[in-house]
Length: 123
Image 1: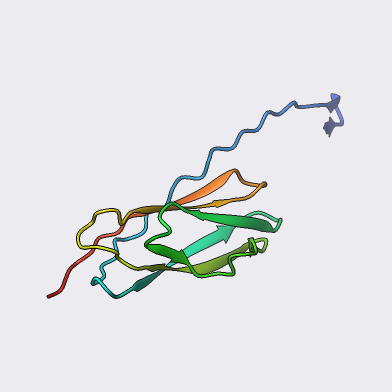
Image 2: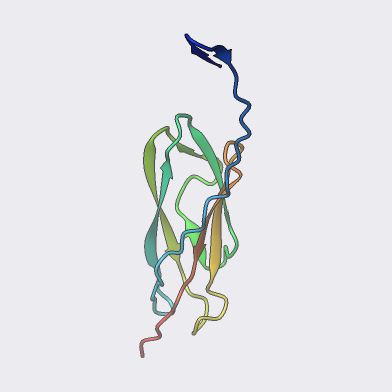
């Protein structure tokens, strides 16, 4: 509702729509078979409310999100959180070493971070 001294009160009817956040692709990781490598994911909350995020990893054989698995991740208002992701290759080559990590919450439909992995085998 707005009020103007000359014309009085007037109303606007707004229909607001938000697009799904665009995915973030992390740089390729390189790791020898039998070892592991770690990379960080940075999550940002630009809103004024706390977000409770439930992570889902499409490839749990090769990727581990280092956190307390029983509790949602709490992302405070107007803050940034860095989460380490550990990659452990299970065979040589690129094979099934891709994953998508998504964070679900009721305030935001879905935040997606596709993770693409490359492996180098060292003799």
